Image 1 (cartoon, helix red, strand yellow):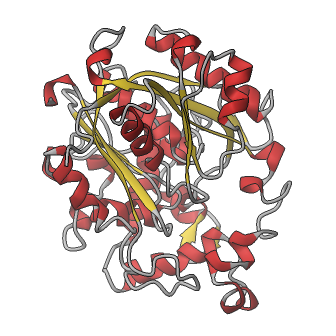
Image 2 (cartoon, helix red, strand yellow; image 1 turned 90 degrees about the horizontal axis):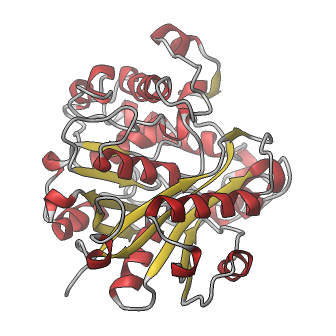
Length: 398
């Protein structure tokens, strides 16, 4: 089996303006086009070079429509990672890398757009969450949960947080540290939606409950924005403008009965990547200890901690020591995470912006740069039925 290790690389990244929910200056489709054009420009390519598009999370911007709007001569690959939300937010990178390795396309844009002010929460209806399948249907257990008031993601993940804290012994201080690190990093990122926002211990502790034990700052924001990356084959990448950022590994993982609904999955004490992560490390040829910086999908603080445990960045036994504010921040933390502000404080495009920050870190151009960063873990999900993750490496890793 050849695998995907270093067979493709990211050569361009781009993004639209970042706006809070309902405040976008243009339609979702237009913001998507802006992000794609910015990634093409960053790579030193032209739109004529692009011949593939891959997205995730039921993205509404169809590749053939994008190709027509951009004037692309031939579309060779059009694909989408199944599943709503951010669980597939690294799976589309795996699909693009596999497509390039198999010769299905030569220059693939991976992208995500979300203008919830236009389409509503993940397209479920303008201004609502709870009118669609994700709330009253299979994903949340439908009749098994809705009659008891379990309607929204914070309510659902509050159960996980309670389990993590009471059974796993994870302290509130770890959840606070995750939130504070995100807002700390965003302060040095002028593109971040919450660039002007700081977060103290007291402000976190005194914020209102959303779904106990989750406070306001345990939950991510919602945004209107788009972001894109361009992948090409490794040999071609070495001829382009930037030093390549290689895809060392990328993949998807769905654990036993993870989609059973009604909070009835067998491995409730994980973030959903406990089986996926070892496979990725094996393919990448690295260990958790080799990771210099990580972009961990931050829908809720509990998910960040569970994902860190799944990916070997800490354990239940040492989480109090590892997941501290000082350890999580760049440039000197032992394990800096979400160095642009993450979903919490930079922008929420269902995790796509995390991958752009992974590329900036390995190029050495991040605003909160980790010195000597060579390997970056970038995760999707967590706590979704299907999760995904990617490991990126600099030229020194191949």
